[in-house]
Image 1 (cartoon, rainbow, N blue to C red):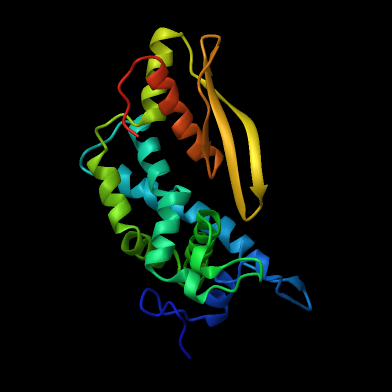
Image 2 (image 1 turned 120 degrees about the vertical axis):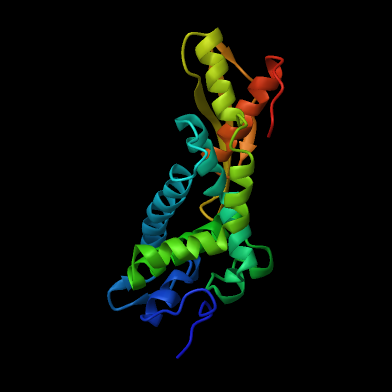
Length: 226
């Protein structure tokens, strides 16, 4: 027996691979209840955070804590994970609901599939196998984050500005949420020093906060890199 992911990881337990590729929208169930990848997604998200944080922590560059946080956020973002999922063809093999078009799956669904696969690889063969999978499939995202490692990304830069100019860290407020569980968007605004800055949209709260920090820096007259 083979799985659609044999070129990346040869599963010992093929059922794990099938479960990782079963999105909640598919509505698959058996005698024990619904069977989808949501629990694997939860596990994969945790494993992914560890593997990416570990990779940057052990780099010779010895990035400061703020840079490590921003670099990890860049690599594990919905955008980055969706890109990886598309490159390795997860949409082609996923089990999805009738209301979804596999040719145009949202970033959220694609990222969900990727995290589910990371969780499945971890359960199937352990942390070393999951580490190898992440390093292989997110190679370009890891390289890009390292290339930008010395730059202050929006949230880090805005926090530094707020600590210096407003004597405290900024806060972020979710102003609006649109869409359903499979395709959601969040409108967020940054606050600091009694000011609420221009809002921004993102597919996740983290992504919206990133762009809200960018908008705040621009409003304050600082040069910001997206």
